[in-house]
Amino acid sequence: MTTRPFLLLDVDGPLNPFRALYLGHRGYVTRRLHPANWSQRQRPGSLRQRRGLRVRLHPEHGARLLALPYELAWATTWQHQANEMIAPVIGLPRDLPVIEWPEMFTADPDGLYWKTRHVVAWAAGRPFVWVDDMVTDRDVRHVEAHHGGAALLLPVDARRGLREGDFAELERWALSLRS
Image (cartoon, rainbow, N blue to C red; front, side):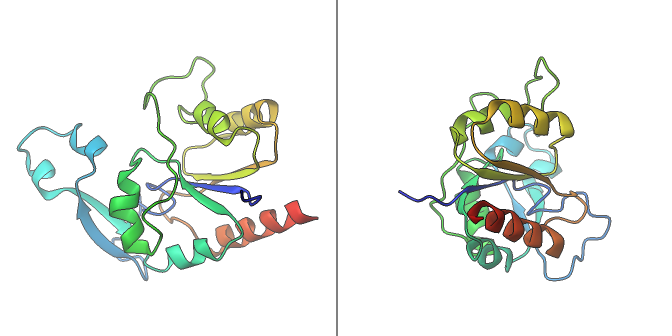
């Protein structure tokens, strides 16, 4: 049993800066992938469906994430396909735990991001950092009120993905738990 906090990773935004204005982010590689959740929302036989989703990933991110004092887990709509399609490209193990969403993209009655309640339940009081491009102050307040352990919601700009400052914040927060 590990006592390290969880680092819950979203793919689109933090690892795949899908809103980037320029395609050539330094160090990133581009892949065309067909994740099931995305494919189901495409018109069958369309050009977009045939080409696949353009995903930009940084091959060094895996090593950077593994060097941090966390237990990594996926908190993404890619679910188990993150282990199959994303992990090999960035150098993460293919067997990371996955939060399985009972429903996706459903409106929350309190205006929370649809993942928030599930993340809190999944973490079950254990300290965690959740890296996502969609978290808001409302989600932060909800986690503070309903999660029994330490938590950090780290919003990442979907135009830039994880940056040096984000890695520094992840390191700083983990070290603060030891104090």
